[in-house]
Length: 265
Image (cartoon, rainbow, N blue to C red; front, side):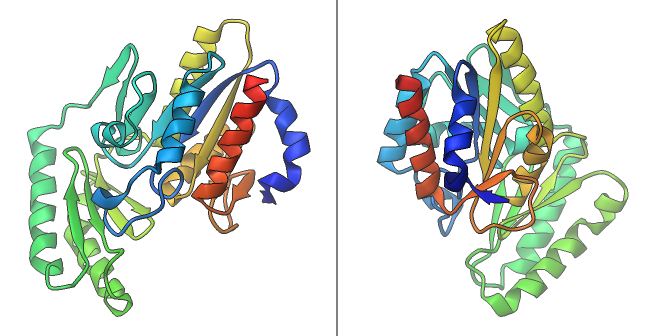
């Protein structure tokens, strides 16, 4: 995987004479990772830059997050962007809105897992259980390193029965374990769906998808777009389906700033 700015002269030619569909993760990509999800904030300079990009007729912004669509929309605040939450299960944007109906049976499973986790993991400092309606997250970023194996064991014991029965799916992220509905849907599938929609809307003008993310859950999108557009991992270079990497959210903003300058010229 190449460092993106080392290949800039070659890469920036890709942006000419195209519409850009820019997919952006939130935590760890646009906003620095915070101690808790509630404390994550979008830097003001990033917010201004995103607003500038959103006004360019050649650009469509789509934010793809593990957060709820409502949460990430409140964090970013752009009216003419697409927000996809819960790893693609929710969508909110211009002329598009979808939130799956959660069956009472699935909610009962979620509630039972949540109760079990609360009872067993509450004794560990730094554990946060987040109920997102159609999913459940166990955050352990603030937990002591020595407790993490025990916390993971508690999680697996709480989910093993419904997981074996295909009543739930689980996802692994950065210091987070998640319980999801048992549907064949992820960030890769939602970006392909949104790309097809944008290609149709753009008619004869080519569309270049760009995906920037930092987490394990973004790998589905990197894989889906690998030969279709530009995929960028934010963070230390590692084994990934992304084509390029940037070191941190500040460099992601530099990339978007350069992109905005090219489009404006």
